[in-house]
Length: 121
Image (tube, rainbow, N blue to C red; front, side, top):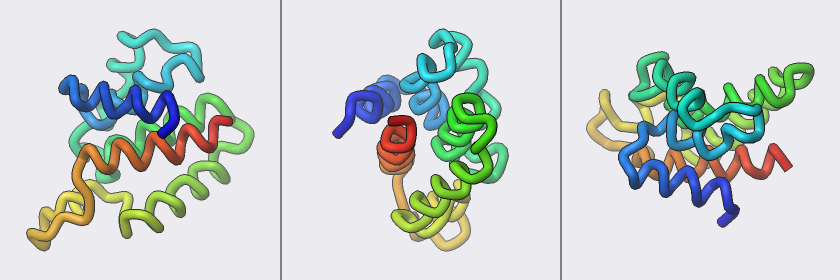
């Protein structure tokens, strides 16, 4: 597993939210400090915006790092993530409506970070 993906997983193990785990691991890609990354990630956590927080954090990184290609890259990211997990929506991933989760939060952090790290190279 790649370095930043490992960092995102460690962040999540250390009680960072899903969005903060990913955004803090990749903060240097867009010139943010860890504190600024945590603050930027806060609105994305826990499915508050519908999508998985790890997905939203990854999309934030892509939009800041590659503003001219952001929509294309976000679409590619979502396609790959959905291919792995069948959804980008937090409620669906957590199985809120079905009682049958598609992926754990840690799994979403792992998948999002691995895809993002590949895309940032």
